[in-house]
Amino acid sequence: MDECLSLSGNLQPGQRLARGVARHLSALGFAPLEEFVPARGLRMDILALGPKGEFWCVECKSSRADFTSDGKWQGYLEWCDRYFWAVDEAFPTDLLPENTGLIIADDYDGEVIRMAPEDKLAGARRKALMQKFASCATRRLHLMRDPSAGL
Image (tube, rainbow, N blue to C red):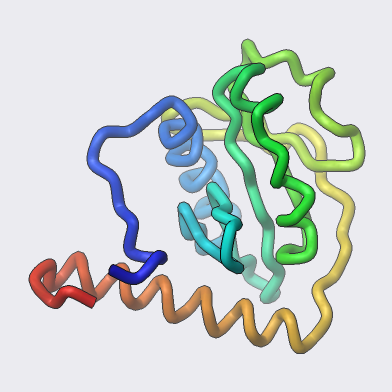
């Protein structure tokens, strides 16, 4: 099965945060795609395509242990224009690097508390990412409409 087709039924705490963040980003005009794989060994909780063609990466952390066990987050920086952490209100935000964005979220919504600094993608990287993003999104839509397609 294609790596971008991983869809889960029961939501874990981080996935519930992702749902709230995705709802908030959608309200801002973004198209969020959860559990996106930009390159082998990386899986973003959310990659969102903005109204001006910008890409925001959001990593959802449900606990201190979840955050401290994540050693790959810096590898995501080269795959987005802005990088955010999404956590709930109880999360100790002083653990999060200050040069990243911050979204406080719950299962149903979120709010950008600190805007991430912009580091624009190179044109060739943006084009390749846009194509992979579109391909993944359309495969997921097709699979939802035709589960037996076996893409």
